[in-house]
Image (tube, rainbow, N blue to C red):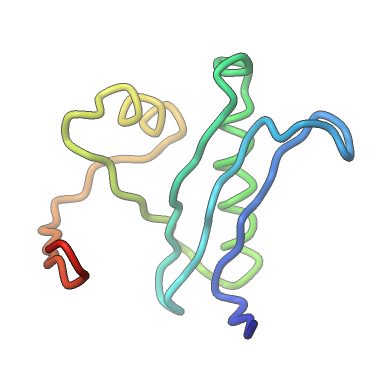
Length: 105
């Protein structure tokens, strides 16, 4: 497997070798950083692990010289939007376009 260094999966545990309690996928395109798929074990939500995962992702990007972290949220996902707003993120007006190109399109 070839590693690009352009992305990683960060894993949060309370102790080394303990159960996985939080994860976040983070990467960049050389210009802007992206946060993908943040998740926290439901039994540990509202305890700060999500915010710590966001900070760890931002630190990973900052260490690589990226000055901006971006993410996408489905319009109807108000709880996730509120979480990221509490973390200091704001809405930027953009148009996101896509096209399904795989089988079952």
